[in-house]
Image 1 (cartoon, helix red, strand yellow):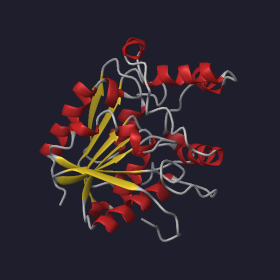
Image 2 (tube, one colour; image 1 turned 180 degrees about the vertical axis):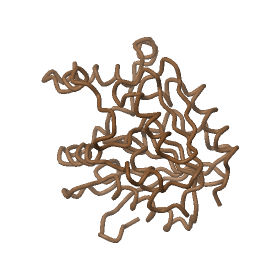
Image 3 (cartoon, helix red, strand yellow; image 1 turned 135 degrees about the vertical axis):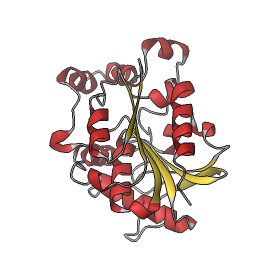
Image 4 (cartoon, one colour; image 1 turned 90 degrees about the vertical axis):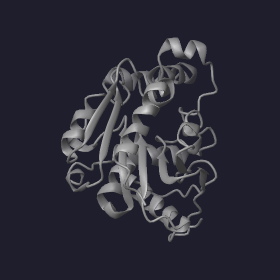
Length: 260
């Protein structure tokens, strides 16, 4: 599909039932969802896409934004002829999902915001220890630090990889920088009260990459939002703790199924 600005954006659909958009984290393609996507496909038609700069989508060297990524999702829904969809966004995908629900309330049935943040001055940022661990010059050590922010050491010991949640390896360097800037520039605080979709905020209690303190901030800002915390889970709660996260999301969708 080609957007109005001439950018080719790749999307994927699988499963059957009501449409469910799955939004990946920063600098990741649709493969972010590979480990858990099948959990939703018996009940929902899942829709994923490759952000600009990832996967099979174009990588223009221009500013990206979470709001702009949301506009790309709307273009995909239009291309599919989908008027309304459930939306489940994790990490930066949760930031994109916030704009989808705030700017296009008629297009979002139910909303799930996973391991996300409102951004801006009100968001709780990761601490300097975490930042330093990710910025160390030893690339292997930095990658290990990222993996341990995503998963517990015990899980990593049993799942040596490959891991699809630590970045799209085919991304050009400029796209990585553009993604980082897009996520860092996110600030939906003033827009969150405009969200009308039934909303679930889900987060791992041990998430240091995007601190769990952001969960009550989001839930307190979105009218009527519910909160579900997963004890002991880190940033990739949806994969390591899929036996808890998947059923929680499915139960919420079933109880607030308003997509059409």
